[in-house]
Length: 433
Ligand code: GLY
Ligand code: MN
Ligand code: MN
Image (cartoon, rainbow, N blue to C red):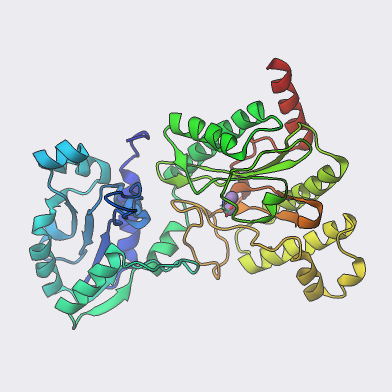
């Protein structure tokens, strides 16, 4: 593993919390993700199933978690099923988990090989009324392939058509949106590594450098620290910043341009999500700085406003109203365009057209119902931006915050964001070079 062993008490607690949400006489099943094919005999890098990881800490392909809290056979109340290692697997794919290793990672005592799954599952189903199965219910997910979980749902319903089927996803969302202190520590580590990547880039950025060379600097820093990119990095110079999900990263950074860096590390599968926008030449122009400071004021205000009890849509509205004022000050909007709140919000969207932030965790756009009010333990991004294609640049700033009873804690408070600090760090690096 690339990361320090996680305290198994996290996964024990997570399963306990899930059990409390299950109806009596239930079974719940969570499957690993498929290893997705590319072309020929290639596959994408394995991406662990976030729910399975959350409940077990196990990343290995084909793993199945079976929970049956009311099983008459006590040993079968919580079982992890694994691929059975063999010499051939070991030769081609390397080490696979032993039962003892899986026990240690997950805190699950009963670990069996997959060959026993169907029989065991049948016994559990004969006692159960309710079956909780999983699906990707992220509102923005686009799923065109049948996942392992989806195939399992089909298999299960065919064999056991008379059970009561229930959705596991809403329960997982409710649990995962509130972070355990161990998860917060992992997120903090992801933020620390992200900071190192950003500082490295501030040190080496020079006019003429290609966006992909900047991406490579992050990759170097993240990889050597046991992390990976949490999402496809966005390195967008000049007008490229106005394409919100720009990922080409193949253009030169020209003198006088800003470059938007939306790049975060994932450590132990926990994602950081950072955006900074910095001047390629090392100094902001007056105009760039004015826009930058407007975005920074909105980010700061909206971090303060991320408090338990608030609804996401209220928070978004506050940001848009604040942004309207800033856009008027910048001369981008006219005061007359904002006759009422509705008009001010609509006008602000011309330059700030995306969400202010999202839950963050095992997934970068993490699960969690945004219809529920914010609560202590939520982690959110705060990411206002102003995009001005007609002036050839965009500015976004993004920090990650933990919500607590005492107020928001900025997990990225130590990552440079003040324009003077950015300029000073860049000037120092250039002097030293
Ligand atoms: N990096 C993706 C986002 O900011 O939401
Ligand atoms: Mn984000
Ligand atoms: Mn981002």
